[in-house]
Length: 126
Figure: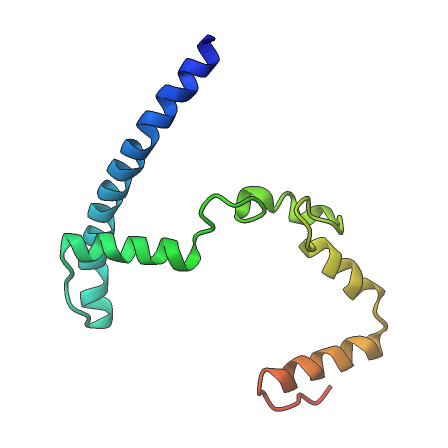
């Protein structure tokens, strides 16, 4: 087996251990931040270490992408460049900026009114 294959095996062995240690360390950080900030700010209870680890896992489940491609800031690219396509599909902010620039003033007013209606806000006099 070549050197590259040996390095991958070693990495495959140590990665789960490293991930576990990182999660446990981050649990301590989450607990410290929670207990230092939120009880005084929002009048919530202090949490234990294992509650902090559980909160970290819950956030990963709810908001993490578990390593799937196409998610997260590193894949957003330079959103200011105005290009319309993102590598994994979807659209960047530049697409919407170009679309906004192509609208007539009347289209913009209609768009704003429709967004206000959808968001449950009263129409603004424009």
